[in-house]
Length: 186
Image 1: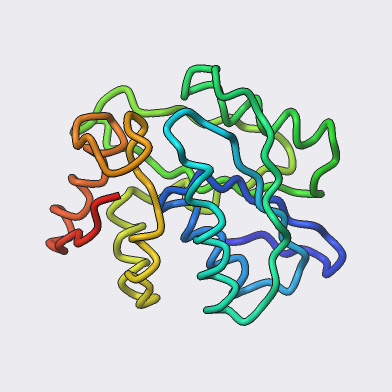
Image 2: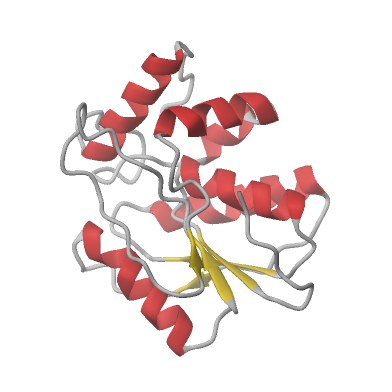
């Protein structure tokens, strides 16, 4: 799932505040001793507000320290352009040696026109062949459903979910497909 990195390689993680990137950060913190640098964007949906509670939970659960998040990027860009912009800025400012993004496959037959991925050297997408259902099942296998209330899915509301934006619909679909009740509302 993850590339091998020498101990001195600084790992950057794009942390949106959502369930995918929170899981990614948790797994990296659990499996690597490398320095980890979370990076987030001050998006208008309030996602950056969820980053610090996620970091605290992961630090407490994995018993390791993680760098404070760096906030970078243009929140006025269309949602589909933010990741590419942030990655370019991160490389230009040498914020880490490699970067991980929690994007996963999108069920085009169920939810068409999902976000697209940016491919760049030094950028890893360990969930690239997963669907959101795999993300939900990984939460179950890791027994970390208590991390979910700290995450934020909706791109239309800063608190709670609209249950209508693409991201909300994907989350609803995934939990239903897994026959697992989503007990969180963020």
